[in-house]
Image 1: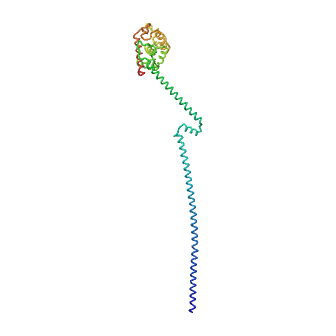
Image 2: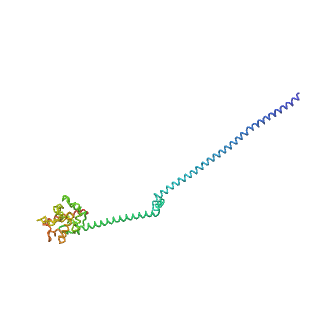
Image 3: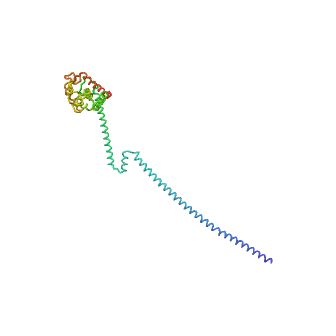
Length: 316
C-alpha cells in the first residue's frame, strides 16, 4: 500500500508540474499575442506621423517659395516704378537742355523738323527783339544828341540888338507850351495857351525866332485877346497906325493863320530889308511903332524872361 502510493504521488507531482509549465507557456503565449498588436499599431502610428510631418514640411516649403517669389516680383515692380519716376524727373526737371528737350519732344511724337522750326522761330523772335531794343537805344541816343545840340547851340539871353532869326533859337513845341504856360499868371489866361505848335509853325514859315514871334504877338494883342486879334486875325498890329487903328490889315480868319501870316509879313517887310533886331525895327529905315523904346523894352522883356524859363527847364 505504501509502495504503490509513492509512485502515484510522484506521478501526480509530475503531472502538476507539467500543468504548471503549460499554464506558464500559455500565459506567455497570451502575453505575446496581446503585445504584438500593440507594437504593430505603434509602428503604424509612427509611419503615419512621419508622413504627416513630410506633408506639412512640403506645404511649408511651398508657402516659403511662394513668399520669396512674390517678394521678388514686388521688389521688381517697386524698382520699375522708382526708375520710371527717376527718369521722368531727370528729363523734366534736372536736365532741361536742348538735347533733353528734343528727347522729350520725341516722346510726344514731335519730329526733328518741327523742333527746328520752333528753334528758328525763337531765334527770329530774339533777333527781332534785339533789333527793336537797338532801335530804341539808337533813338534815345539820337534824342540825347539832339538835346545836347539844343543845349549847346541855343541862346538863353537876348537884348534889343539880338538877331531875331531862328538860327540860334533851338526850341521845341513843348518848350513853347512851357513858356506860354509861364505867362498865364500875368495875363489871366490867354488863347495862346496850349498852342505852342502855332509859333513853331510860324517860325518855320518866316525864319524868325518863335520866342520873338510870341513876345511880339503878346505885346501887340494883349496876349491874343485884343479886338484886332479876334476880329481880323491881326496879332501884330500890322498897319494899325495911331491915327487910324481901323486901317489894320485883315491877316487871317483863325489864330493860326493870323500868327503865321503876320510873322511872314514881318520877315518880308522888315527882317529881309535889314531890320534884323528890335532896335532896327524902330530906328532903321522904317519905324514899326511910334512908342519907340517902350515898344522895344516891352517886347524885349517878354523875350528875356521867356529865355530864362527855357534855360531853367533845361536845368541850366
